[in-house]
Length: 322
Image 1 (tube, rainbow, N blue to C red):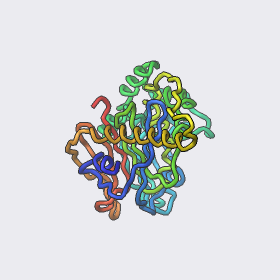
Image 2 (tube, rainbow, N blue to C red; image 1 turned 30 degrees about the vertical axis):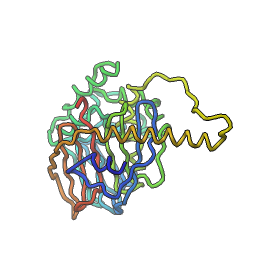
Image 3 (cartoon, rainbow, N blue to C red; image 1 turned 45 degrees about the vertical axis):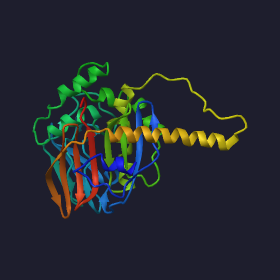
Image 4 (cartoon, rainbow, N blue to C red; image 1 turned 135 degrees about the horizontal axis):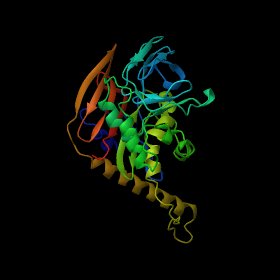
């Protein structure tokens, strides 16, 4: 499985020292935990990064209230009171105590209305189906730039064709947030590989376990959970493990280990079957020794932060339909 992890982003990330853990499955969504070396000193997104104001359509300001540099999670968005909901098309660095105005944010609520009470404010990560397009639109100053894509996504979910992402995120929130309990965050986990129906969907890597825990719900429930909910298979009748009479707990344990090994092998085969394609890296910005780069390939896209050759943060996803 270590070899499979190394092959996920050739030319973009050196994942030496990182390990894949035991996979967990919830319907169509499989999550494989990643553990590895942490990079301390990065402000976590929920505890230190705050939305301070929305200065008109497509202009969102975030402030870093932590002691370390903040790495803004790629495609983070906010459902908030007294302003239309927005999402960001790119990651960025924000120095300690500093604020950054994102002039190229996208409004994900086509018309006024449907605001939540202040106590219900929360952040999300754009659903997987929208992420490649959102990344392409970074730097484009047009608050309505994602409305058609959101409308098409809503229609594919059997919802009204409107540029309102909250039709999925808010109205289906009770269903989507179940993925947070169906898939369990592990001690020391600082990343994950996500698969949908056995196919690679994304790789998420955080600087440390605290950062990953704070972005976990936004990823598992909204970035990947929405597509998994749409693809949720019909409930199958449980099939008991085949254990020989008299085998007792040892036999059951052996059956469980066999099932786990089979799942690990299926995932290794799926990851090994990914196209070994070249990707391009475009450096976007720097903060001291940290480099933020955009990764683009025929089947893969996203952004990564590195410190020399060492990966610090990554959000890489399969291009939908690729």
